[in-house]
Image (tube, rainbow, N blue to C red):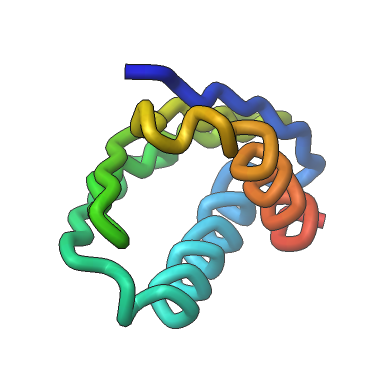
Length: 100
């Protein structure tokens, strides 16, 4: 399965970055909750693992908060491969917005 692999720099403490990422998760759940069939997540320190099925597409991955960077690595369903650039761009925009 294709992957999304994003690194985003930040100037926050890891704890501040985690708190803000938790807001992104809440925002996504609120904005897209009606389209989500399955949502499973867990935090282990500064690492968020997720498994999501929405609109018939499934993805799982991990977001790791490091001192100066957030790293996201996740599955991209093959049928969404043509939209990879747009998906990555949207993720980067949200990270910039919430981690500024």
